[in-house]
Image 1 (cartoon, helix red, strand yellow):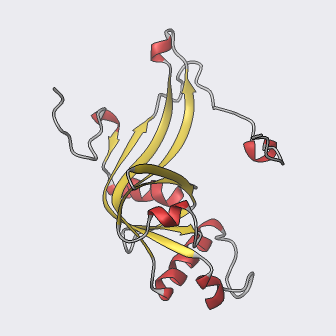
Image 2: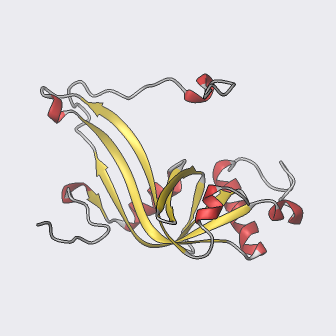
Length: 195
């Protein structure tokens, strides 16, 4: 019988990262993450742009006013969120020993739709500053208007627990190579073929 473990325990303790500065840096540099929620017993996951706000120890995500993410996050909901970075592929002599380098963070917390317009404006600007750091509101683009704020929705995840995990190999690992694949952004079909 398996003994219960803490929600943020990592089975491979040699790969666990609890260092707060590393966790904050990983959350600050990751481009996207995946939000996990449950509504009516159905798990739901959605990839999101996000920003980590260290001053509030929270994440902000931009969502539509209508849709699955908004529906599954009404009120205060228990949520999970994860980010990941893939490193080099690590070949081996046996199939079982093939591996990869990686870094990830999993966090657990309570999520809610941001109701306060000033907090929503603050969060939206944090997102813009993260993804468009080279552009300045009022100079390079018009800042968000009240009408635009009413047409969007922001979601905050108050972080309760988090843990990182990382595997890295020797720089001279034999046969280590980057993973490469075609961009699906450019190869997506232009029409629906579900018929």
